[in-house]
Length: 134
Image: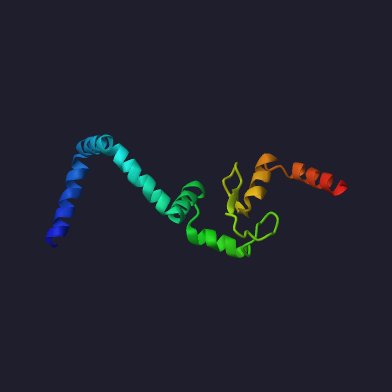
């Protein structure tokens, strides 16, 4: 074991034995540097919108970037609701609010429409009949 590895092992051991001290130090450091750290974080988020989008997608839906791209490919890069291509619009993940299961990827408008009718197929069918009557 070289010097660097020994130092890391010692530090890990010390931190595990002194969790309260580490927690107190981190709290003091956070309070002292909060504004600076928040500004730095804000700049990073603005400079890395793609990474932020991937992070938020993983946090909200538990879906990784490869899984998301696979879902888009299976849908042939078109909206699962209306069948039209996404074009320049940002696709949105549609999921069941009671189970959390991802149903597909939709246009913003298609996703909002489902939300407005509370994902109720009978309401959607009724609206379709209404539109066909003209």
